[in-house]
Structures are given as C-alpha cells and as structure tokens.
Length: 177
Image (cartoon, rainbow, N blue to C red; front, top):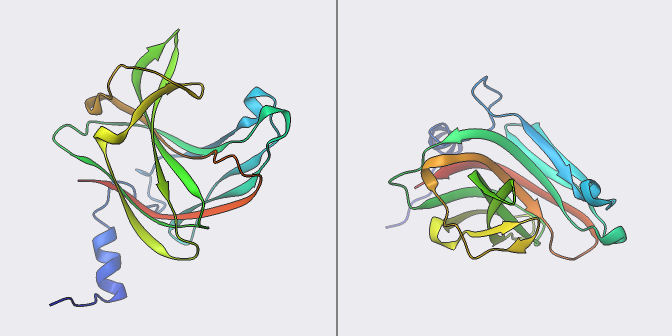
C-alpha cells in the first residue's frame, strides 16, 4: 500500500542528505561559471534561498557560447555507492550533473557528466548511476580515464542544451545511494 508522507516527514528525510542547502557551515560554497570564460555572453548562477539552491539565468549562443553552471568544490569518497540522486524542480529543459576528480587531460581538469531531464514546475528525484558519467575536457568527449568515485573534488550543475533563452532549476538536495 502506498502512503503519502507529511511535509514534516519530508523535511526530516532531507536532513540526512549529502548536500541539503540548509545554510550550515558545512555546506559548500556555490559559484557560477558561464561561457564568458571562452567569449560567450550567457548569464546565470546559483543562489541559496528558502533552503534550496536556485540555479537560473539566460543562455546565449552568441560568440560560440551556450553554457552556464553552478559548482562547488568539496572532497568526497563515494566508494561503495552506486550513484547520485538529486531532487529538482525545473523548467522542462535538459541539465547536466558533473563530477570532477584529480584526473587531468593536457594539464587541466576532466569533467565527468551525465544529463537529466526536468519536468516544468514539478519536483522529481533524478537517479544517475556512476556508470553513466562520461569523461570530457572542455566539451570534448574523451575515451577515459574512468571516473574514480573515491576522489571527488567538485560537483556541478550545468545547462548547455543548445537552446537560447531563460532557464531555471531549483535543487532541494543532493545525495548518493
């Protein structure tokens, strides 16, 4: 039998998550990185409010741009875990969840990414197995190395779906399973 849980029960469950955006000192600092690093003009970034991460802005394809991201540096060892779980409320667009380790290609960071869909105005739990993350370097797919989940150094939300215009996603929490 399926039963609904109360808002208080839902809040209690969220307290046990890896990242819960509660404003505590243990929460990572979230920063924006947009396509301006390569000449683009997209605007966007993270804002913590009302106990969640709000990631919004305007994506532009001008000057070969087209991405915006919210990232946090943190050290995690996800050994023994199978993947990432995030609870998001989006705008119907496709986003990416990215992880970085100490792996490098030509001296700079390799990003491991996986896409996920959002439903406009609806909260959804997205589960991403670690086996679905693909390595890339500056937007180019790589053949390896494989993701080493024992050496996580950064997590990131990114939008780069090739569609100019406003975007908005709210993140309630991030966890591993």
